Length: 217
Image (cartoon, rainbow, N blue to C red; front, side, top):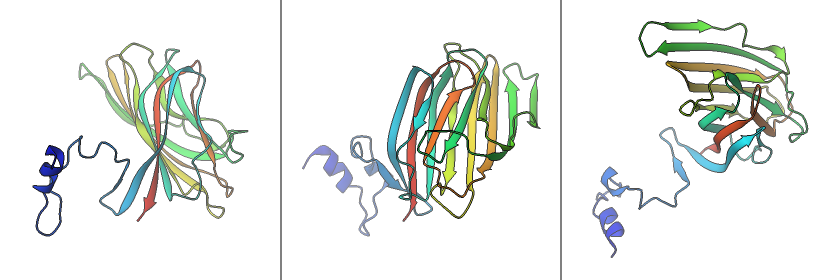
């Protein structure tokens, strides 16, 4: 019996429960899906990494297989300073990204000197029945240490009955400030959303986005 197998076996209770000590990077290195605490499953579907790219688009994978989808943003950065990270949806497999949306947007920020803080709604960044790209994070810096991290959830995009709700939350670092930005809204269409595109408001984009499917067990 190998050391990994022996360690796992020694950490299984008589009732068949695996103890935390039995789970290591080595013992689960090939696992891509776990049941979460609420009884659902989060499954990695695809990963896209941009390097000075115009857009990051997901044109496959959004279908009726999953109840919801989650996108994880990792080290998203603009090539153009003070650009905004944005998103839009498609009902024609990516030929057009122009779904009509109504959204809300608010942001909390805090500087490193502890002299400037705010929590406020932004009427300039929400949308009201607009097909424009929605801002997820504004004024993203292009310094070597500046980036965006966070996630966006899209619920039941394949429905042909209901509008398509989405929620995003990101953390953005620009020199001496941390911004926590929240967007929620809906794509006002009963057509299935089958593609999604992320891009900067100007210039190209760097970073990685991972797409996960969320399915109830």
